[in-house]
Length: 81
Image (cartoon, rainbow, N blue to C red; front, top):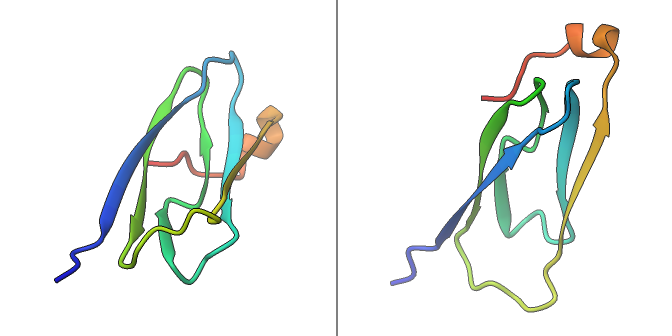
């Protein structure tokens, strides 16, 4: 019986300003990423969990996009937790 796989990735913002992030994969039906999108305050961190119920395929890819946010942009978002 396959119980799946879970990996934890800790994202840390070492910048003096907030950053936004988003995870992408080429196999969204096989993976659950929580949180998939979020914001990190200056010097903040968050644990991201990647779960798969099936066998991991060698061709599966992940992409982490991030960008610095202005104070106004960050004010409209809730920090990831």
